[in-house]
Length: 478
Image 1 (cartoon, rainbow, N blue to C red):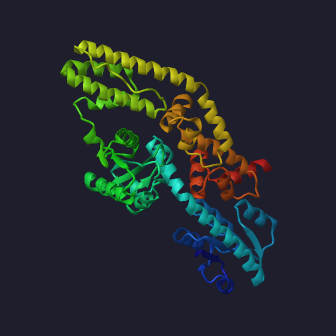
Image 2 (image 1 turned 60 degrees about the horizontal axis):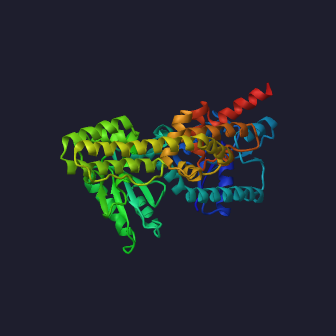
């Protein structure tokens, strides 16, 4: 793996000597030079080096000032000070900034290559680990969008999502023996963002650039082709979603029609819309029982008995599916099919609705009494791990959508914000430990990407981790 190394020194001879020593020991390194701190910042922003060898005293901007500015810009790299000044204050400041080593000039080529080699090995190991975690980071990110946590990820949205004006949610239902790695590879190829697998279903977000049907069908066919033909699977596609804030609706639509006995099914084709279909969907999504009763009453009055009975059964199934997605398991809805009038049908419908509503209320009270405390305890004990909403939901034996709703209803906060607050609380304590770098702290509190950790930390505290540490340590010394 090729690493980028930036040598910063105001003496041309020193820069050239360092480069010759290191180029001989590490021929694969991509070497760059900067003659002062300001030029070092410009190089860092443009080239994003992995390792910087930094002198301290240089005209215009010191090496320590340059390091602090580079870190504030969110550039992820390691620093080694190479200086002739053996001063405690300099060394202390360097340690507070997370500098990996402090070498005094003159240093031998052997000592230099040993230290740089050890740091390079750690950088390569971290890069390899990050590559392994990237799919999981993407899946957690997508899940946050699908479960209404837009405000917690809007600062780190990939450019294709920021620049897209509409989207589709595509849900692949896999046969039990199919894991779907081939589909994930196709998703990368087509610029599609993958969510977390749940109950043999994996959601994907498709940025729509031109024609909705054409683009979604192209991706769906690619997914189907990537799966083994002997294993049945299906692809369900939501309606066209006009903004990222409404992706949760797309998720519900795709889930609703997923598993239908067709290879590819569109929500708009499956659900037969009437003029009041939007009202139906809103009432069912919110489990507004009063509104649901009114809509059933309106429907039975407007349609012939046989047609009203058939549609009533379909609508009751939609309510049942919504309850299932909220983690409320119960038997399927039933109607007698022996009604002789609309009035009798409506009476049977209301009895079925009352049964569903009572079951929801009973289960909610039973679950919510202790599930919230279980969730908080689990997060307190596992905040440093990759605990996505799906991970927590699996631990609680609940549906992720229901867990998300539980946090909003009980704590008036979404799940990712609660988890972030816990992690930042622990990170603030760890930042008082001068010997621990901010990158180590990021990993220790559950962030695999130090840059993202810095953005989240600043969002909740108003300071970057480096700024917070300096302020906290300065306050302790007063």
